[in-house]
Length: 320
Image 1 (tube, rainbow, N blue to C red):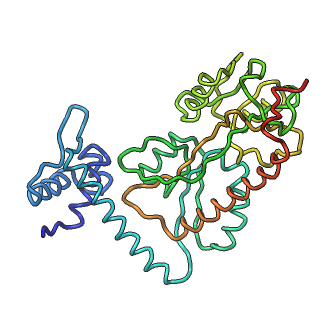
Image 2 (cartoon, rainbow, N blue to C red; image 1 turned 180 degrees about the vertical axis):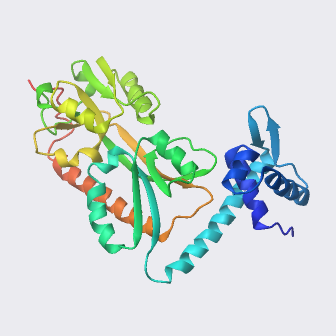
């Protein structure tokens, strides 16, 4: 059986994820020639070519991609074993770097922190708010332990798991004239003036697909990747926006913003936890995510109670 040193395996992983010997060397605090020698040594041992040099960079061969996937599984298992051993020390300590979208920072984050911070006072917590493209890039660059982003096709260097499938709501201000909590069939609404995220946002593409597939008329569209500004603008105008239920649970019954479930058909958004493929989640990350998922589940229970009395057959497009 081939005995390949761990440093050589890490070199293969780095080249595959970075697509460049130079960037792989920077990541591994090594020289470019050193990384090249490690990769060449693995290829000699396995007697198979792992990478092709192209004008666009370094790409793995089919054998290289298969070997990479097995390597990250093995390295992840080693890191998980180390994390389990450290957990026997009892006290949870260390850094925790998290990326969250505004979808989750407005209503989910505060109660999670209120519970997590007193339970884990020795954890040095750093939370970054941003949109999916930025957070995904930060995870790839190892600047975040994990991030919560909309579900996407995936990429080399990242692994993901489903966190939540959330129902979308239409949010408007009193001037728009919608009945609070009444399910809406958007195709029967008057043409909407709607605030949407920018074209690079995954949710934007999902919204446009829904509008086209179900005959939703749009009178005007305003692009805004600024959540607080979007909600403030909608609250004082006759424009609307569409957001997941988790962000708007605290608006139930307050009157400043009107929330309506989208129905017939419903519209959902899926969110995943992404993390570097080569790393396992730390104890503090797993504890945070457990509390985070519990809070999302609680919010869904609140929504189920709030909209349960309104039957789907009694849909309204707007106030009469």
